[in-house]
Image (tube, rainbow, N blue to C red; front, side, top):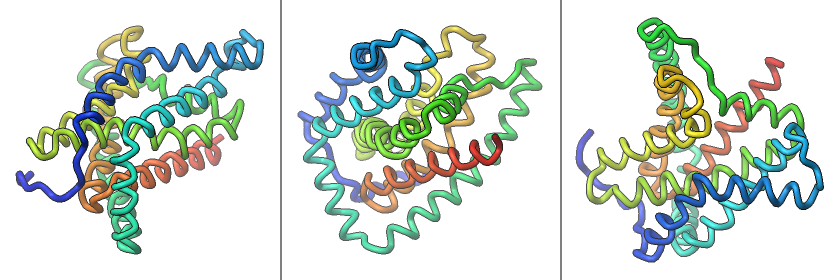
Length: 243
């Protein structure tokens, strides 16, 4: 990959500091806060009743907090996508096609790792998403197709990718992809064999690459937010169709 930087915008120092300061909250604190808020509002302590609204609250808290921290950056990125115009649709289509191609390669990698490590593929994050979708589809759709894409893109493509991009394009791609994958696995990675985590890791790398690529190509993180939302929506439709 050539070390060539495009104009994808820049982060202010205050935004970088704010994003890094919020990272522990994103990884740990906001989950507990979301569960506490839902329990306080609903009065329920039934785990199955809490999954979907807690995920919604978790995504909402992160979207609001990160949207506030990166508000100036996000406003600049919105202006960029308006300037991009209809070309954005081509960016989204190409990004999705890249994702599909890489996802097929990732499925082969998962199968190969299963053989080498003699372990079964198990994705706790995907199971949680499916459970939320069946129990409370409105909460799941709002979380996965609106709130989560905003918060996650600001963190993974905004803080990680944009923050590293001018120093090293390769490093920006590599670390943002790995960060994106690990965050989707960390809730279960300490309670399952490491082989299962290694097998599941390639599943999320195509998402990370395609979302970073479409951000770089379009020059606006808004495009990666739209693609993220679209990929989640298509995944939900597939889950519903296979039910």
